[in-house]
Image (cartoon, rainbow, N blue to C red; front, side, top):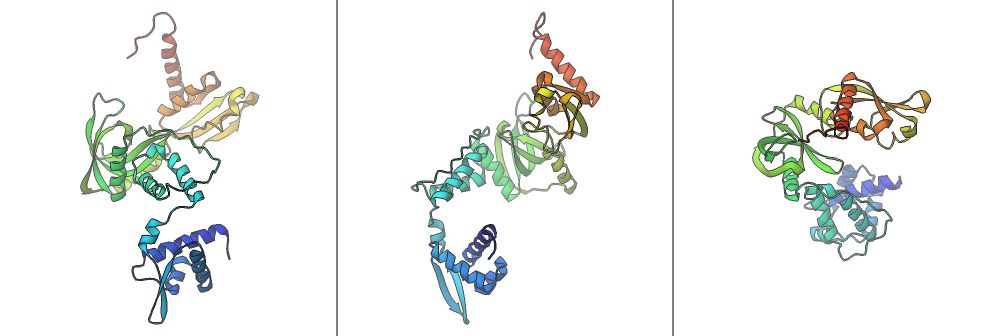
Length: 320
């Protein structure tokens, strides 16, 4: 009869196929839609009935057609465990408050607001959204409908927000903050934009047109340490023995390779896209980290630490 997971997937496809059919669907059609055999489909139909679904049956040309009233699907409440699972997912998606998938979850939970959810004994403390929900809704709506966005956006080095026309590609959450990966018309390149820095977002009627070659750059943006992305560069960073056991907990990038080093230390080897955030990662380790390669990153660390020390020695440096 198959595993529980396969039965669950098949049942979900069965419900979807029946609910989408306007005039009912036959067992033969359900076999094709779900990949199940006739005997299996009949068992699954009985299982749906036992679960509380009311299936309407109509015989057309000698074949039974099954359908589920749309009103029943819309009004079906979640079970206590389903409600608890959906609520857990909603908390985990807190940084995306306002986005279309989160609003779907909220509608789902609202249908069962009178149910007492099951205690799953799992606690997720996700950070609150750092982006305005209205802006995130507009961005996700434009992404879903593949429409161009007009944004007023204040970059890290901008004194005031600037107008941009972008073609959305993907939303990515980094350290609890949502970012939009989009093709920027003026820059003629993909950019990773922090949604919290958007001061105005408007979906336009124009369809997105992202150059096919640009989509390859999306992978390099995704593989950046956090947000900043540049040319690929190989790094080797030595972590002292006392801190070496933590490198798995605080990785530079998921694809990093950890090699044993003399004296119980560990070398973190990775390919990164730009050194800006690798620099910040190294500084977080304090005296426990030392850059071995490349020279550019090593010099940046020395410069950053020298500037920081100048504020504690003699006359403090003027902070900009």
